[in-house]
Amino acid sequence: MEYAMIMAGGAGTRLWPMSRRQQPKQLIPFIDGRCLLEVAADRLDDVVPADRRLICTGEAFREPILQRLSAFTDDQILGEPEGRDTVNAIGLTAAVLHQQDPDAIFAVLTADHLIEPQDRFRAALRTGFDLVAADANRLVTFGITPTYAATGYGYVELGDPVEGFGETRQTVQFVEKPDEATAEGYLQAGNFLWNSGMFIFSAAGFLDALASYLPEARDGLAQIADAWDGPDRLSTLGTVYPTLPKISVDYAIMEPASRDDTRPVCTVPMDIQWLDVGSWTSYGETLAPDADGCRSNVDSVNLDSHGILAVSEDPDHVIATVGCRDLVIVHTERVTMICPAADAQRVKDLATSVGESLR
Image 1 (tube, rainbow, N blue to C red):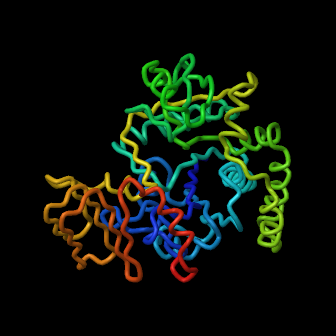
Image 2: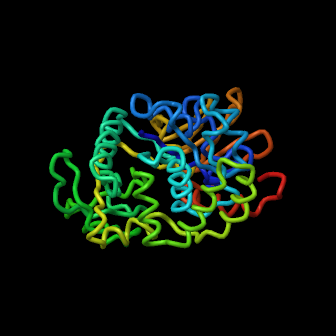
Image 3: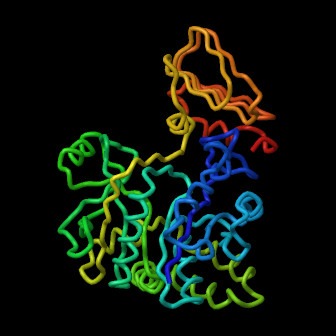
């Protein structure tokens, strides 16, 4: 059967002070009253049934997620005792699903992206599921049509077409965050796409790849899977999972597989609008600007100000500025954070420097 797993383990410190321990960025209700995790789950409608959707997250986020997303049950949350990067989040999902359904095929999705239009996204997922159903050893990724020479994203290079599966292409290589000149060359070449961080695998196929390229992780996950349905689940997970090698799925699996002729790697192009909501400036792109480039999720008053992003948890709170330029202003019950828009990435450093009670 077909399943989907949403990775939702990030703390999102670049979105502090709204993103904090009990409300990580994937649970901030700032997308028309919904959180990013809700938006990601809703995208699966008409593709994967609600009872075959999983969320892999930090164990500390289990209760906040269950409170926010009532459609998910406790068994649909895979709680990591600590983050061990994406290869282990995916490997844990594969190991658990394989115990329950040896023929499981699952999509790996993210909780921090906004994607439009939905019908193109769902059509691409359908193609990915069909690719793996036809060959359980296939490793399928999704590439986003680049709109500029981005240096903050990874890229996939497209090879020959995969016959019978629309615009699907063989994957030549994965490239991590190139410099500006290289990224510009990729944009001009036309056969490079942004690496979306979304995948489809069969549970058996992924575990087999893990055994080939990262056997120590495969061995540890096998111990966890063996204990999953018994009384030692939590103790085994808590003991073994933190020992797994911490590495991304791109480095551990996708890159070596793309160089291995025995394991087909395919890319399904997604011609979509794709926004990674990872900072306050990227969140600002979800809000319509006024004539002076000011954006806000609440009432705001700006006198002779330009390029202001004003965000508040309190819908009745008014943010007002006079003669300001290119600022980010975020208001919560306990904290008001102000920074130049150009320094929005440094909010992560600010979040680590505040007192423990504010995190």
